[in-house]
Amino acid sequence: AVEEGSAVYDNIRKAILFILPTNGGEALIILAAILLGFSHLPLTPVQILWVNMITAVTLALALAFEPSEKNVMRRPPRDSHEPILTKHLIWRIVFVSFILMGGTFGLYLWEMEHGASIEHARTVAVNTLVMFEIFYLFSSRYITASVFSWEGFTGNRYVLIAIAVLITFQLGFTYLSPMQLLFGTASIGYDIWLRIVLVSSSVLFLVELEKSFVRRKLKSK
Picture: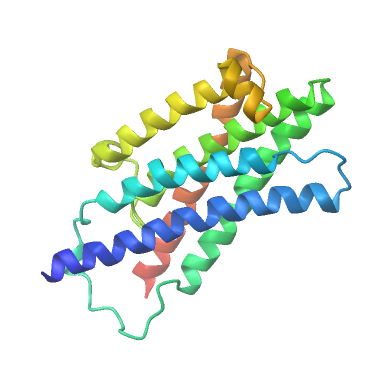
């Protein structure tokens, strides 16, 4: 019972730790565009709705089925007065939000500066944001432990299913004519997908690097 209760509590924190930065990144993208005086926003309201709808239903829900971490029963009892969002988790939310904003807004600017249409640039921005969330989902499986292991990437089959479903949706969002008409998207080339993956994967490595510093700090106490 104690193990299950700890696992449920962990999963609530992981879901919050995933949802808040992804929404924070979206808000920062819009805020940056407004402050810089852009005449066209990188994401339209309906595109933001699309991202929130499919990620909430697929990726965030997959964390609810996350198995308990191996060291859960070796931890000391948590302080009953400790908030769900500690200072460290608030820092993680802000940190990831700025990573998502920087990468997504950066690729949007890259496309616009190279003569792409606004529809094309926004399609790149949306897909970059979604790919960021996919990579960040892996890191979200463990709050402080490293995800760089076979168990870390494959230990929750619901995460893998959710990612497969999400990628299928994104391909339809990008290439199907009715979806292009509805969401104002455009087809993009394979070379652009490579650029998107390279940029969005940075969140995985940066968060895992941040985790390593946290683990060292905890060991030194």
